[in-house]
Length: 219
Length: 220
Image (cartoon, rainbow over all chains, first blue to last red):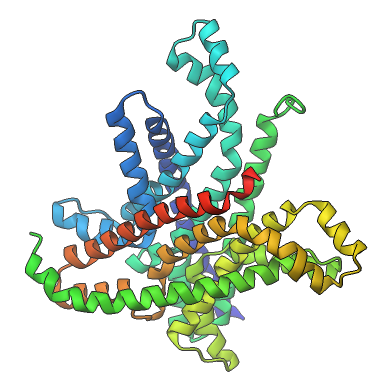
């Protein structure tokens, strides 16, 4: 039993890398989602075209291909990335593209009367977005953002293939060292499930916090 | 490093071999996901809590964990239990099982969308549970699900590169072996990306058509 403790520690070290990757990737994804999502509804055609290209490109190719491209092809253009940087970049840009559609959909779903009220109050575009539209739209985005964060956590397993020592990578190390397959893989499956449960619980909590006192007000 | 068209022409036949396996895996995986999803959705509706609760937990568990790890599990752990699968079969089972939990949600939404009166009418006509499902509920529930199901099959298609991790010789694996053999990454990896991008853009158009043809679940 003693040796398992050592191997378990190895897997937990990998879990830390996975958590770090998920957090940093989520932050980048959130930023990209708002930039591209707001870009999609911009007044300027060029901005809309740029945002659409970004979204279609990153949703159209798989995360795996993007990661390999970031890790193996970008250095040929002079951008050398560490595996962690490549992982955060690929995960953030990929999930950000999915998030952008969520941002756009939520903003579009806010009723016309809210925009008309902004005009009546003589708010400029930035003020109406900041004070009226986004606070309402953000609550609508939250559940899907939670799902996206879970997708990001799951996609982060792919970084083990560019030799970043995340949880999946460490499980492979344990498998290679012990020859045991059930223990490492079952352990990380349970850990991944725990992490995604934590994400969905956190999002539900945040949603409850942001909608407190709004029962019956929201349609 | 420069883009070399001669090298592209040279590696194209090998890449096309990979494309065949990628498409085969997607098709088989889609069929399996469609069947598993339907099974999960029906079992989850069971009145018996000893059936619906464990099935629900299993589906949530599979949906909350990475496909890559599930593939490793199927490919490395099952042989220890005496079940040895070829890489492609293991990959197709992994894809089918993983996306089956997603299609189960689509089925659930579609089934919930069938009006209550239809269930009651089936009951009034004294149809058995089997007849109710096959003659009344599914024929009404399935068409609006088609676009949503297709959406997940496209998502599955984009996940097939993961199969290279369990040594299936699909497109990504062919590209990686070419890259490692020739020390040239730019052409093979970019070609893989371009291939997926083209297929996805085409499938987005096809999806719009399906939505026009069959409608969307939310709108009905």
